[in-house]
Image 1 (cartoon, rainbow, N blue to C red):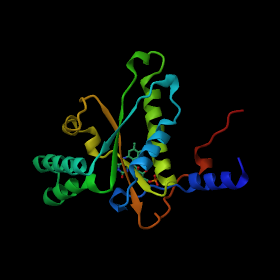
Image 2 (cartoon, rainbow, N blue to C red; image 1 turned 45 degrees about the horizontal axis):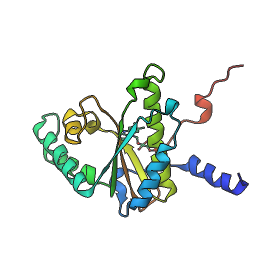
Image 3 (cartoon, rainbow, N blue to C red; image 1 turned 120 degrees about the vertical axis):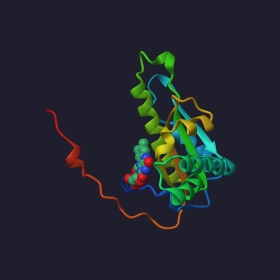
Image 4 (cartoon, protein in one colour; image 1 turned 135 degrees about the vertical axis):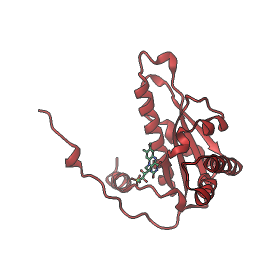
Length: 195
Ligand SMILES: Cc1cc2nc3c(=O)[nH]c(=O)nc-3n(C[C@H](O)[C@H](O)[C@H](O)COP(=O)(O)O)c2cc1C
C-alpha cells in the first residue's frame, strides 16, 4: 500500500471514537451508503462461513414505535424513576437518524465445528466494521446494548424469539462536534511476551 494511504488508514484506526447516540443528528446515511456500511460489516472473519449476523434496519416509524414500547415498559416497571425516564426511553431509539439492530443468528448445523463463541466473536467484528465503515463515510456512530437488548418484551415486539441475542443497537448519524479523547489503557499494559 502507498505510504500516504497507509498513514491515513492507520490514523483513522488510531483515532476512531464513538459519538454518543444523543449527539447524532441528521443527515444519516443514504440507502446506498447504508448498504455499503452493511456490506463492509459482512466482510469480517467468519470461521466456516456461518454468516451468523443479522441486521434489522429500523425506519423512522419503527424508531418511534420502539420508543413507545420502551416508555410503556418503563412506565409499568417500578425499578425506573418515573416521568423523566418515560420521556427518555420514548426518545432513545429516535436519538439518531439511523438505527440498526444486530442480532446473532447462529449456524446450528455447524456448532460442533464452529463453537458459539466463534460465531459471537464474528458478530462483534461485524458490529465494529459497521462502526468503522460509518466513520469512514464521515458519519459518527455508537454501539449500545442497554436494558432493551436483554428484554423479552422488546425482542418479541421486534419479531425475535426469547432466546435471540441482540448484540447491539447501532446508532448512526452526523456529529456537530468532534468527540473528546477517551482515556484508554496503553498497549504495554495489555501485552505480555512469550519466548
Ligand atoms: C457490546 C457493547 C455494548 C455496549 N453497550 C453500551 C451501553 O449500553 N451503554 C454505553 O454507555 N456504552 C455502551 N458501549 C460502549 C460504547 O459503544 C462506546 O464504546 C463508548 O461510548 C466509548 O466510545 P469509544 O468507542 O470511542 O471508545 C457498548 C460497547 C459494546 C462493545
